[in-house]
Image (cartoon, rainbow, N blue to C red; front, side, top):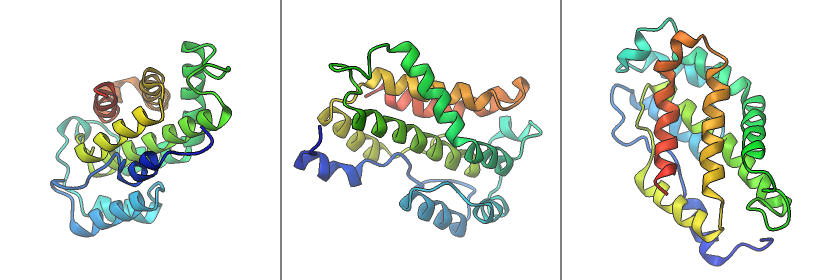
Length: 197
């Protein structure tokens, strides 16, 4: 898999996880900041989070009932993204022994590197949903293209779903158990979407 097919090259720019269309109670400037971060594929900066927080009216009652601040949650996840991805990777490798070996779904090493990079992007997109308090943050068209891309590249879907579950587990472990029910839907939404692939 050293050389991407033409179809894969066409699908890559269309395979987007997030859509900000229809986000409610989030101001236009905040949406613009989120869109720029997504276009540039980076986590939200402290400045972005301040603006988004000021321009967002809370619509997530479960989240609002916790002492958690969305910006604080996003900062913690962003700042620990590498460790969270490492923990998710360890879960996948434990659940799928041999996946990195010849004949395994993440062989050769370039495939594995792409998978771990996707984990980083999954967490990035989840943090956008948390920042805007939008549990349904995904793009149907973007995920349809991602499904086609994953099929084209023979990505091992069970391992990817296990990876997002690992991201959820690692992320939630950083917060008190009493807050898990409010945070879990942001992870569960993406888990459900990829489980439909």
